[in-house]
Image (spheres, rainbow over the protein chains, first blue to last red):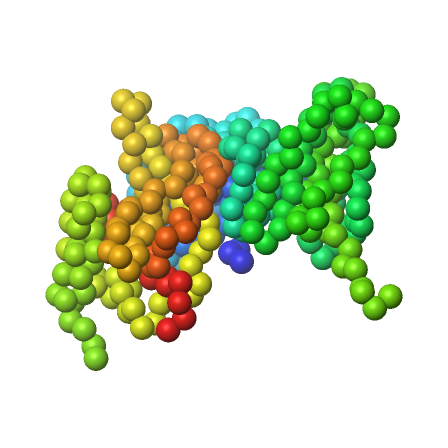
Length: 257
Length: 153
């Protein structure tokens, strides 16, 4: 895994850039609290970094001072400090928003549009992709559209990792029926029936779902089921959010018993 | 036997013949410029089995005038023993859309993969990437081919 760089630490800010002077991808973020920051990974496309901190009267040919802020720079590939003129040149060519960020303006998180869309980190996107893959399976898929995937992954982004079991080895075993969790008034229920050949979304009868005890009985040809309830986590202060994701696998019957 | 660069490129261009004409022209031009070692056409040592889903991780720059420039994307050339050829271009299954002028990340892609058609004997994964020459600042397209077969060699 690539080394991670913290963009904001104390009164210092550091940003990684590619060859086009564009900000490298944000890999993760601590969004709240005094240690809030984004992180970037030292991916292969990273060419240089710029660091800014309050001018401390210690300057040399490897630093550049502007408006009381001291900038230093580093060429990643050759592992060399930038000269003052190189730093000055780069500061003229990076986005003004990022120069302002380096100078300490605004949130400690990198601004939206620079390395991320301001909402989703690489880890979250990777998790959303895993969930998508879990839903569509590894072969054919039916009755599943990108709109459905979007509804689910949008909620999955804000679901705490510990609430999500994406591991079939830890699936709940079932014999015959499955009793999906009840959601709330904002929830949508999605059920995907799977075997090694296909993943298909079950069309749910709303009248059936409204019953006090709602259950489904997957056809015998399906041995795995993914049950997702959106807006599952209720919150008194915020709109309900997050998903419940349950994996079920059919219990293997032992004929000798 | 080690094949020479010319015969690999001639075979690659031959395989592209008959697909959508615009793609054929674009890909054939790339074949001419790319290092032949990146065109893996070793039919005796293809990857097995065929992937069942065809994905397209992509990075795309979109400019204000609507023009789209692919920084990287992945296409699939489908072949069968009857001689059918088809270029399959899945939706962008992962990756990001960037603002063309600034390189700002606008949104992630989350499309669905294509399912490999039944009547497929071989697939060639064609990964195209725009790299920037850090000395000149010009972008250079590079391409990698990877061959899959539905039978073990």
